[in-house]
Image (cartoon, rainbow, N blue to C red; front, side, top):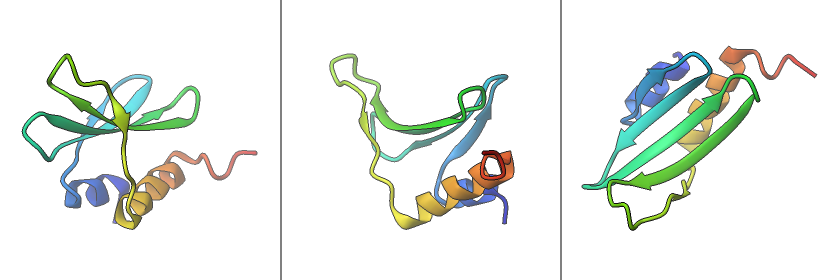
Length: 83
């Protein structure tokens, strides 16, 4: 199973851009769960954002299923092969 399929199974949608891949899920009325893979810096930014301008972004709790999807994406990007 690909990383995209793993994220989709968890309720996330892939949004590709030139410099990053972002998986987005909306699990509550105003909360967006984001996992951003910065392709230039080779870093991952998981967070929760809100539709409300008064609610700051906060860290995203990562369970084992989400961690496996993240690890699969990192593997597919070849980041584990580089040292």
